Figure 1: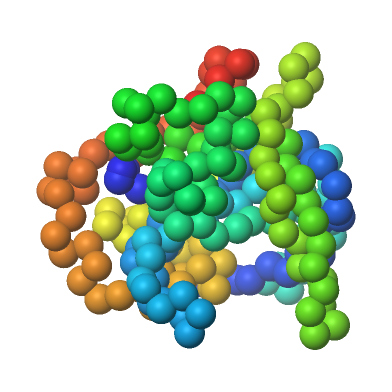
Figure 2: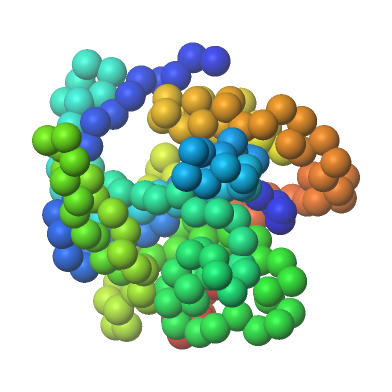
Length: 211
């Protein structure tokens, strides 16, 4: 897939409220091959998807300045469209259509950047903190104006490193990228590395099948 230094400062957003939100995909970050855990020891190729909930504004502080913007949420997925993957049903729900056999041979998830949707947010509580989790993603409602792509929307892949894009990632995502297994991309197909990066989704994509 085409997804086939000094930080600019960190932002702290309040958790998105529970429920169904109008949103737009504002970040697609290839995390590379991530180490396994005690519970799941096998390394996995992971990707992080970020969503701006445009129907909910929050105030936050960044670089010492108070600002406001769309509430944000995101989730990490194994980069797989296998039968048991979590990414495949999420994308099929989002596009409102199952992938055909040809699409399952390889889908460039950078196409998700800038695509509007509706995100179901569910809360979990742990150690006195509230976390906003993505339950599912469904298509943007018909007849409703689509939101503009956020100016800080970003895609990043360590296999085609872009320093400017990397520096726009929050520190914790930079650390995840740095923590990927060494040489995990050493044997990637050279043609795949050289593939041009797609632009953010335009406003004229198919209303019925957004990607």
